[in-house]
Image (cartoon, rainbow, N blue to C red; front, side, top):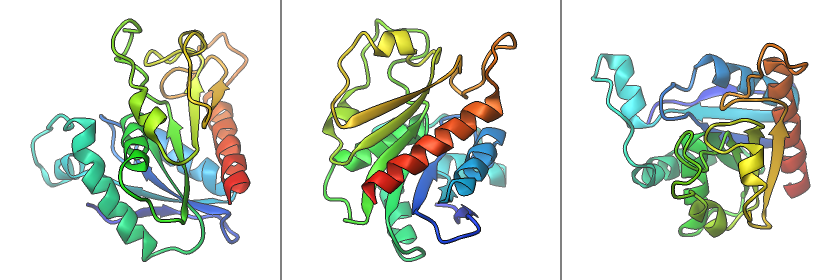
Length: 214
């Protein structure tokens, strides 16, 4: 596991979020930078980390595809244990896309420390991109033993608002939809929404979620 990349608010945080990246982009991608900054502005401290396959690319290693999501649970658990020694107060676990899926899996297996209050998923991959008839990835959400907040673009190809509203989502899962957003929350040019505005909305919703749980 790489060292944490911290983004902290100016005041004492309402909670600290352990944030994992998605399958194809690192912890310091433009999206992750914007999201961490917006979360800090809402009083949430963010500790980003990288899974080993992604960290290996920084040292000239091969551009390996990610392992299966369930193979990454142990690495997330290791990061959480390290974070417990570096922070005080309530914690959230979460991530972008695949990272959020792994966080939900972690919340469903074994026993999480009591300081971990919930799971925050930014663009949850409900199904393979553009394939709503494929197997839905609902089991991590159904099995999670903590409340889950999902921030989802209206037209996310991994699960659009129309597709999600046609299925049954567990009661402990709350959804916030981001106007005309794609998987990275970006709207189309004709939309009145903006990428930065959608990211701010996601951060506000996450902060409200943390404060309700805290």
